[in-house]
Amino acid sequence: MQYFETESFVSFFNSCNMSRETPKKQVVKNFDFTPPPKAFFRAFIAPFKFYFAPQFYGLKELDLSRPALFVSNHTILGVLDGYPFGIELYLRKGVVLRALADSNHYYIPVWKDLIADRLGVVEASRANCSALMKRGDSILVFPGGTKEICKKRGEEYLLKWKDRTGFVRLAMEHGYDIIPVAAVGAEEAFTITSDANDFLKTPFGQFLKFIGVSHMYFKDGDLIPPTVKGIGNTIIPRPAKLYFSFGKRISTRKFRKQFDDPATQQIVKEQVENALLTEFKKLFEIRQKDTDRSKWRRLLNMKKPD
Image 1: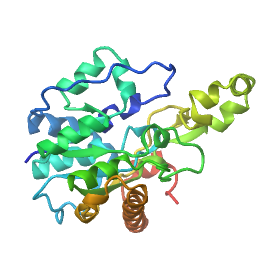
Image 2: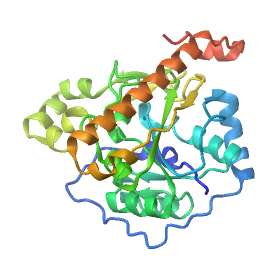
Image 3: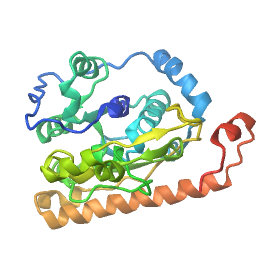
Image 4: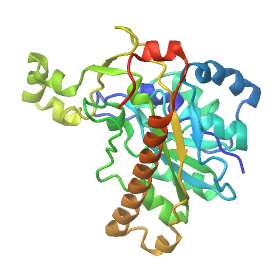
């Protein structure tokens, strides 16, 4: 069995849906995918590792004997959360995750073909996820989706899942285990200079609220990305150290016959949320004790994260 994570290669392009029309759903007749050689990813990730010094926990103990649904949190803009642990998983364990990508990716010519043909990304839909599970692939999902990418001030590490239970429904239906993966550090790489609340207070934002556009297309600000700065007044992210933790498998097999029951779905979803929050706490404690002696990193980060 092989798996490789690709969602976060494309997360930055998740944006607000500006039209009522939806892109034509991706019809995948052949889900087979061969990832690029490991040498390519070693070279690709080397500058990233130097700059962000990612740390990985729980990988040695991870049970990879059977496929699973990997569930992770999106960080601000979604540009620093998925591919580091996905590549590490591939390089160290030969594991290839099939990422489910937001349909907004499929508005972009050339890009949509690139992520499907070269990166193995599959458009997020219940049918496609079910087909991948029937094949026995492991899959990566970010239940928070675009809402977690479009963070506001004070929403660091907030899981914006609300009523999203589709991922647990499919896991229960197919008897898939769920593996939570926590990502910490990326929220400190950027500072939000303006968020959706600020935008909606502007005259133009007030106008969009008045005519109903902000509610209809932007979900009252949940789908409006923030403006950010990193080093100085640039968008170059600060070299904040990144931390990733793989939690224990969560079995859904005992709920297989109840996969269509909303109450049971909610129970399993909350179990996954709590498991992810536990991994957050573990990483926060590790980070608090981590003494990075790199002067240039301390200088560019300016301050230690809370």
